[in-house]
Image: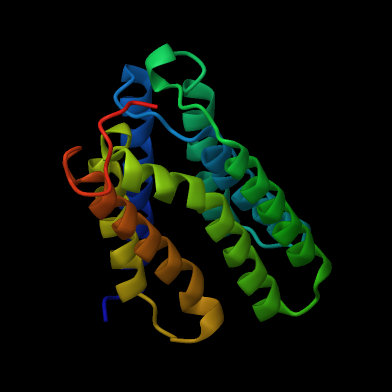
Length: 198
């Protein structure tokens, strides 16, 4: 177990992965799924607002930062044609399900159930990008996800109390980023990966 203050270091490293993905999006090397990145931006900002209303101060800015970078990636995808990835009908169904999940999260007064619902919503929002990373690994930035996974791994090792509310989110984000890093690091010729850009 790492000291508690290492969680802040982990969060900083995790955000660097997001900024690297932003850089690759601007260059057109990464083609983000706009639905995933839009929802990855909105959900933490909803949490940020909810935290501020309840008087949460310091840690609320981590939620703000978690949503701000994905929104920058989403915006950057409109400025470079090479960064465009066409959304499929399935993506919109998953987006609707994710939004429904976050609405259920907002209506519950049980903290752990709310957390579970928000994680479910985030998983649904992440599915289009997981599928894309599996089928078109070249369209993603494995380095960005690996850096983020390293950061969130450090944060996970810094957790002092292993209860659901303390570990669930950071463990989920670590597993998600590590999975995306592995999927995106495969060569286009790998079984399951296609050579098509879109």
